[in-house]
Length: 248
Image (tube, rainbow, N blue to C red; front, side, top):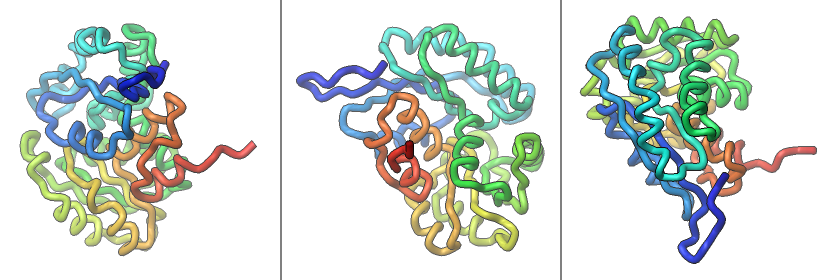
């Protein structure tokens, strides 16, 4: 449950489980954090971006969950997209279950947030921009296809694991603008270590389509889990929609 507001104005503490190389998602979350919401991270060591290394990283998932338990977090976001989609939807659900069983708190994974966000925006055909190399981009397209979403075009920046956080948001913007969007209802930007919050609204305006980023989706849905939708900073069409009052 969220913390009640006291003299310090606290609303909720949110746990993040983050790959150890990630230098982007925490600053992005803090930059748009509502007053009274704080983020507390545990990090998983990752040695590569192939499937075997991503799976190996998750062996310490319970340890990471234990590390944030004493922070009394109200919910947890699992902040690695590639390791949550790499073996399909049941694998993704098993990651959430493992965290939930340790903390007894609501959990959202990066892959789950991505699917929820695309569904919320009514996007069934999407163009993608990621930091990934070809193999992971292919696995992402397969994962989306298995869950009813077609990738109409895509651009992977083909960056090494420790290079993704060094990519500028302008690189993401230019990559998105270079895509064939004729058959796409929106653009999805993957990789939780890829800078892009500052270009979402400009890109939406320039391509006349919604832009969903994995960090934007994780941020919005973890606040939704805690009933804090009205506190969401309305950055881009997705987060604006999340703030809309529920009908009925």
